[in-house]
Image (cartoon, one colour):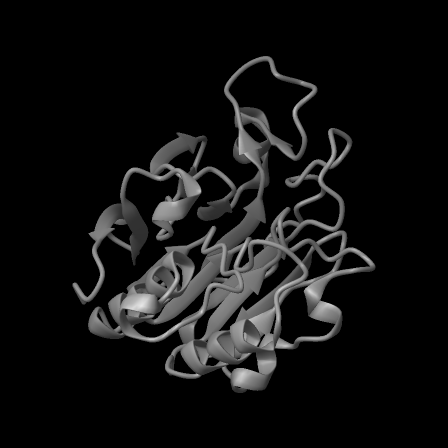
Length: 244
Protein backbone atom coordinates (compact mmCIF):
# COMPACT_ATOMS: atom_id res chain seq x y z
CA UNK A 1 0.00 0.00 0.00
CA UNK A 2 1.48 3.32 -1.07
CA UNK A 3 1.20 6.21 1.35
CA UNK A 4 1.89 9.91 1.00
CA UNK A 5 5.50 10.77 1.82
CA UNK A 6 7.87 13.71 1.55
CA UNK A 7 11.59 13.24 0.83
CA UNK A 8 14.63 15.46 0.66
CA UNK A 9 17.13 14.37 -1.99
CA UNK A 10 20.65 15.80 -1.98
CA UNK A 11 24.06 14.90 -3.38
CA UNK A 12 27.46 16.34 -4.19
CA UNK A 13 28.09 18.11 -0.90
CA UNK A 14 31.85 17.74 -1.44
CA UNK A 15 32.89 18.32 2.16
CA UNK A 16 36.62 18.88 2.50
CA UNK A 17 39.08 20.01 5.15
CA UNK A 18 37.91 23.63 5.01
CA UNK A 19 36.07 23.45 8.33
CA UNK A 20 35.68 26.54 10.46
CA UNK A 21 33.33 28.65 12.53
CA UNK A 22 31.12 31.51 11.37
CA UNK A 23 32.67 33.44 8.50
CA UNK A 24 35.49 30.89 8.36
CA UNK A 25 33.16 28.00 7.49
CA UNK A 26 33.96 26.26 4.21
CA UNK A 27 31.49 26.18 1.30
CA UNK A 28 30.80 22.47 1.72
CA UNK A 29 30.29 22.97 5.44
CA UNK A 30 27.85 25.83 4.81
CA UNK A 31 26.02 23.82 2.16
CA UNK A 32 25.57 20.70 4.25
CA UNK A 33 24.35 22.68 7.25
CA UNK A 34 21.71 24.42 5.14
CA UNK A 35 20.61 21.12 3.59
CA UNK A 36 20.07 19.61 7.04
CA UNK A 37 18.22 22.77 8.10
CA UNK A 38 15.96 22.42 5.07
CA UNK A 39 15.13 18.79 5.82
CA UNK A 40 14.20 19.69 9.39
CA UNK A 41 12.12 22.68 8.26
CA UNK A 42 10.09 20.60 5.82
CA UNK A 43 9.71 17.72 8.31
CA UNK A 44 10.59 15.19 5.63
CA UNK A 45 9.91 11.49 6.08
CA UNK A 46 13.17 10.41 4.46
CA UNK A 47 16.55 11.95 3.60
CA UNK A 48 18.43 10.61 0.55
CA UNK A 49 22.12 11.40 -0.04
CA UNK A 50 23.17 10.18 -3.49
CA UNK A 51 26.96 10.27 -3.26
CA UNK A 52 29.93 12.63 -2.98
CA UNK A 53 29.29 13.63 0.59
CA UNK A 54 33.07 14.11 0.69
CA UNK A 55 35.24 15.79 -1.94
CA UNK A 56 37.99 13.20 -1.55
CA UNK A 57 38.95 10.20 0.53
CA UNK A 58 41.69 12.00 2.47
CA UNK A 59 39.46 14.21 4.61
CA UNK A 60 40.68 14.64 8.18
CA UNK A 61 39.03 14.18 11.54
CA UNK A 62 37.53 17.68 11.95
CA UNK A 63 35.57 17.15 8.72
CA UNK A 64 34.41 13.72 9.88
CA UNK A 65 33.36 15.07 13.27
CA UNK A 66 31.38 17.83 11.57
CA UNK A 67 29.67 15.28 9.33
CA UNK A 68 28.60 13.15 12.28
CA UNK A 69 27.34 16.24 14.10
CA UNK A 70 25.16 17.25 11.15
CA UNK A 71 23.79 13.77 10.40
CA UNK A 72 22.87 13.35 14.06
CA UNK A 73 20.58 16.40 13.83
CA UNK A 74 18.18 14.46 11.63
CA UNK A 75 15.48 12.29 13.17
CA UNK A 76 14.07 10.80 9.96
CA UNK A 77 15.69 7.80 8.23
CA UNK A 78 18.76 8.70 6.16
CA UNK A 79 19.87 6.53 3.25
CA UNK A 80 23.19 7.21 1.56
CA UNK A 81 25.56 5.85 -1.08
CA UNK A 82 29.06 6.72 -2.25
CA UNK A 83 29.99 8.79 -5.29
CA UNK A 84 33.09 8.99 -7.46
CA UNK A 85 34.89 11.44 -5.14
CA UNK A 86 34.27 9.37 -1.99
CA UNK A 87 34.21 6.00 -3.75
CA UNK A 88 34.33 2.73 -1.83
CA UNK A 89 37.83 1.82 -3.04
CA UNK A 90 40.56 0.26 -0.89
CA UNK A 91 41.64 3.75 0.17
CA UNK A 92 38.11 4.98 0.91
CA UNK A 93 37.43 7.31 3.80
CA UNK A 94 34.63 4.91 4.75
CA UNK A 95 37.17 2.32 5.90
CA UNK A 96 38.01 4.67 8.77
CA UNK A 97 34.70 6.48 9.12
CA UNK A 98 31.24 5.00 9.61
CA UNK A 99 28.39 7.49 9.10
CA UNK A 100 26.16 5.16 11.10
CA UNK A 101 27.96 6.42 14.20
CA UNK A 102 25.63 9.43 13.89
CA UNK A 103 22.70 7.24 14.91
CA UNK A 104 20.56 4.23 14.15
CA UNK A 105 18.58 6.30 11.62
CA UNK A 106 21.48 6.12 9.13
CA UNK A 107 21.46 3.40 6.44
CA UNK A 108 24.60 3.18 4.31
CA UNK A 109 24.15 1.11 1.14
CA UNK A 110 27.67 0.12 0.17
CA UNK A 111 27.52 -3.22 -1.63
CA UNK A 112 29.44 -2.98 -4.92
CA UNK A 113 26.64 -4.60 -6.92
CA UNK A 114 23.86 -2.70 -5.14
CA UNK A 115 21.77 -3.44 -2.08
CA UNK A 116 18.23 -2.96 -0.81
CA UNK A 117 16.75 -1.61 2.40
CA UNK A 118 13.12 -1.64 3.48
CA UNK A 119 11.19 0.75 5.74
CA UNK A 120 8.01 -1.07 6.65
CA UNK A 121 6.50 1.85 8.58
CA UNK A 122 6.81 4.03 5.47
CA UNK A 123 5.85 1.32 2.99
CA UNK A 124 8.99 2.02 1.00
CA UNK A 125 11.81 -0.04 -0.48
CA UNK A 126 15.10 1.55 -1.59
CA UNK A 127 17.71 0.04 -3.88
CA UNK A 128 21.05 1.82 -3.93
CA UNK A 129 24.35 1.39 -5.71
CA UNK A 130 27.29 3.69 -5.12
CA UNK A 131 30.68 3.79 -6.81
CA UNK A 132 33.71 1.66 -6.06
CA UNK A 133 35.61 2.51 -9.25
CA UNK A 134 34.55 5.32 -11.60
CA UNK A 135 35.30 4.10 -15.14
CA UNK A 136 33.49 3.51 -18.48
CA UNK A 137 32.80 -0.12 -17.60
CA UNK A 138 30.83 0.84 -14.50
CA UNK A 139 27.09 0.82 -15.21
CA UNK A 140 25.26 2.31 -12.22
CA UNK A 141 21.82 0.96 -13.16
CA UNK A 142 22.95 -2.54 -14.04
CA UNK A 143 20.86 -5.35 -12.52
CA UNK A 144 18.31 -3.34 -10.56
CA UNK A 145 16.22 -6.02 -8.80
CA UNK A 146 12.48 -6.26 -9.32
CA UNK A 147 10.26 -4.89 -6.59
CA UNK A 148 9.06 -7.65 -4.27
CA UNK A 149 6.92 -5.56 -1.93
CA UNK A 150 3.87 -3.34 -2.03
CA UNK A 151 4.46 0.38 -1.72
CA UNK A 152 6.99 2.75 -3.24
CA UNK A 153 10.19 1.56 -4.89
CA UNK A 154 13.03 4.10 -4.96
CA UNK A 155 16.52 3.92 -6.36
CA UNK A 156 19.75 5.76 -5.65
CA UNK A 157 22.84 5.87 -7.80
CA UNK A 158 25.67 8.14 -8.88
CA UNK A 159 26.57 8.69 -12.52
CA UNK A 160 26.21 10.67 -15.70
CA UNK A 161 22.88 10.68 -17.54
CA UNK A 162 22.92 11.17 -21.32
CA UNK A 163 20.02 10.68 -23.70
CA UNK A 164 22.19 9.55 -26.62
CA UNK A 165 25.80 8.76 -27.49
CA UNK A 166 28.73 9.34 -25.10
CA UNK A 167 29.29 5.61 -24.59
CA UNK A 168 32.83 6.15 -23.31
CA UNK A 169 31.78 8.27 -20.35
CA UNK A 170 32.39 6.77 -16.92
CA UNK A 171 29.38 5.63 -14.86
CA UNK A 172 26.94 6.21 -17.70
CA UNK A 173 23.16 6.17 -17.16
CA UNK A 174 20.83 5.87 -20.17
CA UNK A 175 17.11 6.55 -20.72
CA UNK A 176 16.48 2.89 -21.47
CA UNK A 177 18.14 1.82 -18.22
CA UNK A 178 15.98 4.25 -16.27
CA UNK A 179 12.82 2.94 -17.93
CA UNK A 180 13.81 -0.70 -17.45
CA UNK A 181 14.53 -0.15 -13.74
CA UNK A 182 10.78 0.09 -12.99
CA UNK A 183 11.57 2.35 -10.04
CA UNK A 184 9.03 4.93 -8.94
CA UNK A 185 11.73 7.53 -8.24
CA UNK A 186 15.46 7.50 -8.96
CA UNK A 187 17.64 9.78 -6.83
CA UNK A 188 20.74 10.66 -8.85
CA UNK A 189 24.02 12.28 -7.96
CA UNK A 190 27.08 13.47 -9.93
CA UNK A 191 25.78 16.38 -12.02
CA UNK A 192 25.76 19.66 -10.08
CA UNK A 193 22.76 21.16 -11.88
CA UNK A 194 19.15 20.46 -10.91
CA UNK A 195 17.28 18.50 -13.58
CA UNK A 196 14.33 16.13 -13.89
CA UNK A 197 13.70 13.43 -16.45
CA UNK A 198 11.10 10.68 -16.85
CA UNK A 199 11.40 7.45 -18.80
CA UNK A 200 8.55 4.97 -18.61
CA UNK A 201 7.07 5.10 -15.13
CA UNK A 202 10.31 6.24 -13.50
CA UNK A 203 10.84 9.85 -12.47
CA UNK A 204 14.54 10.65 -11.97
CA UNK A 205 16.28 13.80 -10.80
CA UNK A 206 19.59 15.42 -10.01
CA UNK A 207 19.16 17.76 -7.01
CA UNK A 208 22.08 20.00 -7.92
CA UNK A 209 24.79 20.78 -5.37
CA UNK A 210 24.63 22.91 -2.22
CA UNK A 211 28.35 23.71 -2.57
CA UNK A 212 29.04 26.92 -4.51
CA UNK A 213 32.74 26.09 -4.75
CA UNK A 214 31.93 23.13 -7.03
CA UNK A 215 30.95 25.14 -10.09
CA UNK A 216 27.25 25.30 -9.31
CA UNK A 217 25.65 28.68 -9.96
CA UNK A 218 23.28 28.18 -7.05
CA UNK A 219 22.79 25.93 -4.05
CA UNK A 220 19.90 23.51 -4.43
CA UNK A 221 18.24 20.31 -3.25
CA UNK A 222 15.20 18.37 -4.45
CA UNK A 223 12.02 18.11 -2.40
CA UNK A 224 10.08 15.06 -3.56
CA UNK A 225 6.43 14.37 -2.85
CA UNK A 226 5.20 10.79 -3.25
CA UNK A 227 1.43 10.80 -3.55
CA UNK A 228 -0.56 7.63 -4.34
CA UNK A 229 -3.25 9.70 -6.09
CA UNK A 230 -1.30 12.58 -7.65
CA UNK A 231 1.88 10.66 -8.42
CA UNK A 232 5.41 11.97 -7.92
CA UNK A 233 6.35 15.65 -7.96
CA UNK A 234 9.87 17.03 -7.65
CA UNK A 235 10.47 20.61 -6.55
CA UNK A 236 13.76 22.44 -6.79
CA UNK A 237 14.56 24.20 -3.52
CA UNK A 238 17.07 27.02 -3.95
CA UNK A 239 19.18 27.52 -0.86
CA UNK A 240 21.20 30.32 0.65
CA UNK A 241 23.34 30.33 3.81
CA UNK A 242 21.08 30.62 6.83
CA UNK A 243 17.92 30.55 4.71
CA UNK A 244 16.25 27.62 6.43
